[in-house]
Image (tube, rainbow, N blue to C red; front, side, top):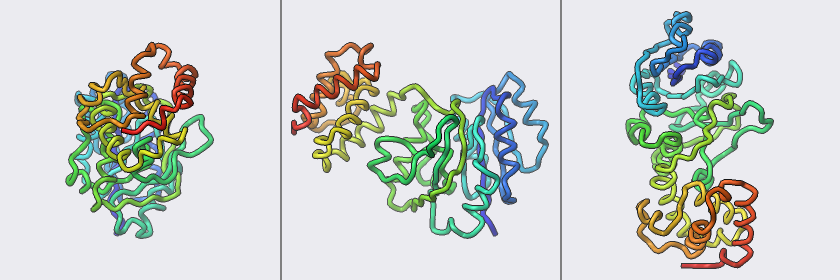
Length: 301
């Protein structure tokens, strides 16, 4: 028996796109599936479109929520499948054989976290290959690329709704840190997602309270990587995007050990620069390069 897959769509005022994503689900050449639509109280006709499908494999409810991750958590609780997958209202499966390819031949046995790649509208390359923990500390796996066994959420808890745009990144980090969770990468394109699924904002509570302590802890064993310009640049951008303007900001994030000298140097340098310039990529890159050439990447504790 092929496992039941619960596809969850969290939507709010998605009348222009919801038909595409629901149609993509219904078009999957895989029978043991359900679609759980969590609507946040749309006022643009989204619910009327959902009602038109009138399909027994579609479960839906419309009510106010506290944001996308609250809606996704509701979807998890309502799902009855063994596996959970999140499809954005503006997204679609890459082709009609995705579910059959991943779950039709027993390839999922002994796996709890199964992921592949996605394609973005307007981009030729797929995103973004196989991940290890180091890579996950730099960028996230797209949630449209991941299938989770439902019991993972029972083990780790659901999404942290205090993180407004990166709670899925926080959850993926927790998965990679849990040795009992068996993770498998499949080099297949799972979904195509629209620009509406891209967030241009930075989730400061996540960056500071979840990602920063993890990155610093990991750096303790790999501090020599900061001698590398690429790693130095990555940390420079992270400090900028996290708006860390003093050592106190780092301590307030829960990190109470002596900061590596190179990190403290970046924080101190950025604190002296106008934020308006730091936000401009070209200027930020120039300041980073000057700081690197000055020898600050060679600082230790």
